[in-house]
Image 1 (cartoon, helix red, strand yellow):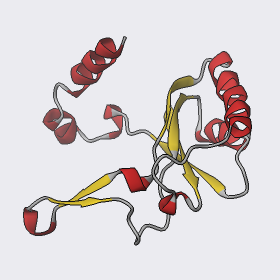
Image 2: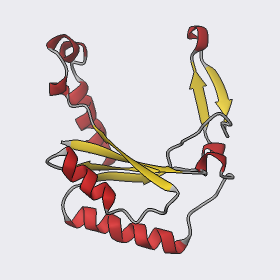
Image 3: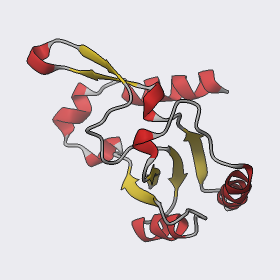
Image 4: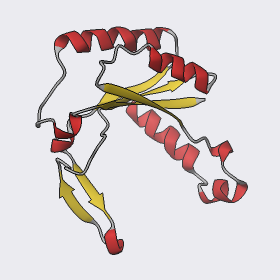
Length: 141
């Protein structure tokens, strides 16, 4: 089972462009990342720049509208993620609980939808998805 662990740092919604975590926090997080890797459960991870450097595309009336960050209405934003593969939701939660996060950070644990989770008509509509995903993975390597 694959899970995304989504880092939600409180206050990041108003972080200035270029804000970065300090070396001490990064060193602690690297130890955690290494433990995920050594356990063989880590499939991917990335940190994200603040929303002040991002953009949102909304589709009111079916037409795209672009808004540059920051987004004052945002209450929670993503700071980064880990993709892990474990045997259960409980195991994913255990891994999230080991993270050296600060008191202003939240980790949301969400299971990734697998094709087998969908009914046959949806699987038919997504024909070629598995090959597309594999192709993207090969291109990365």
